Length: 459
Image 1 (spheres, rainbow, N blue to C red):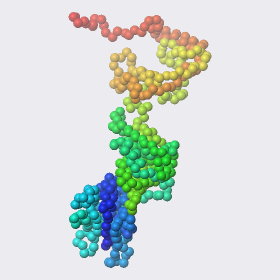
Image 2 (cartoon, rainbow, N blue to C red; image 1 turned 180 degrees about the vertical axis):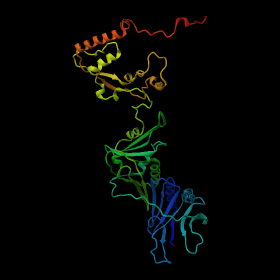
Image 3 (cartoon, one colour; image 1 turned 90 degrees about the vertical axis):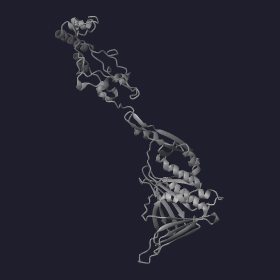
C-alpha cells in the first residue's frame, strides 16, 4: 500500500482553495493523483468537452512531501502513482477562505497536514486532513474516497502551431465587457488586431424568435500580447463560462495565460502557472473561417424566403429562358383571350428594347387560379387558399429588383396585323355582336336575381 503525506503553509492553503473553486465550475467530483514528483487535482465535465487540472510540484509548492509504495505480497513492480476520486464540496468546506483571511482570529490556519491512511493495520481507508490553528487548536477531518482510474485529456502540442500569450489582467478587462447571458467566446486575428467576441446564436422557430442574438466584441492590439502567432482570420470559439472561470483563477495568480491550438473542432489548451503550481485546461473548440455574424446568420432561416405557403412566384425564381417572350407566345395569348388583341410592346417596333426595372413584390401578386369560374360566387373547396389573398408582407419578403425583358424582341408589323384580323373574324363568328358590344361599352355582369324577387324594407 502507498504511503502519502504532505504539509503546506497558510498561503498554499489559499491557493488550494482557489484551485478547488475553479474545478467546481467544471464538475462536482475531482480526482487526486499522487506520485513522487507531483500531486495532480483534476476534473472532467459530464459531456467530456472540458478537462481541467492543477499540478502541484513536490519540491516548490509543499513544505514537506513524501510518497512511496511497497509490494510485500508479490514480486510485481509497485505502481508509481496512487489515484482516488471524491466530492469537491468535501474539500471546499475544509479549505474555506475565511480561515486564512484574518490572522487575528482563533481559526486562522498556521499549518495544514495531509495524510493517507491505507495501511494493512487500518480498519478503514481515509484521507486525514489536520488544520493547525492559533492557540493550539487542531481541526481534524476524515474523508472517505473511492479508488478509480483517472481519465486524462490528450493534447498534441507539436501539432498546435497557433499560440498567443497575454497577461491575466488584460483578459480580465476583456471579460468584463461580455454579456451575462452569452454562451461562446470567439477570437481571431485581422490586420494585426485580435478581436474577442462574446456571442449568442439566434434561435427561431417559424416566426417566433425564442432568443435574440447578442454580440460583444473587444479588440486588442498586437503589442498587448507577449507572444502572438495566429493565422489570419482563423476563428476559434469556446464556452464563455469556461473562459470566465479560467481568467478569474489566472488573475488571482497574476500569471500570463498561454493558449495553443491548431484549428477549429480540435482541442485547445490554456496553461499558466507560478510558484510550483501549474494549471492546464484542455477544451474542445468550434471554428470557422468566416465572421461570427455570418455563422450566426447561417443558423437561422433565410430572410429572403417566406415561411407562409403561397402560390405566388417572383420573377427571380424563373429561368432566364422563361422570361423571354416570343412572337408565337404573344399570338397564342391573344387567341386564348378571344378578343384578338395582342399586347403591344412598350417601345417602338423594330427598335431594341431598353431594360425596365420592376418591383418584384408588386409583380409577384398573382390572380386566382385559371381553373376557377369567374362567374361563381364560391370557390371550390380543393382550391380554396385564403392565404393567397393576404396583403404583401414587406418585412418577410424584401424588395428585389429584376429586369423586364418581355418586350425585348422585335415584332413584324405585317404578321401582327394579319394575326389580329384573323382572330377578330373568328371572334365574330363565335360570339356574334357580343364581342362588338364588349369592345364598345364597359363589361356588364349578367343579373343573378329577378326583379320580382327583390323586396324592400316595407314590402
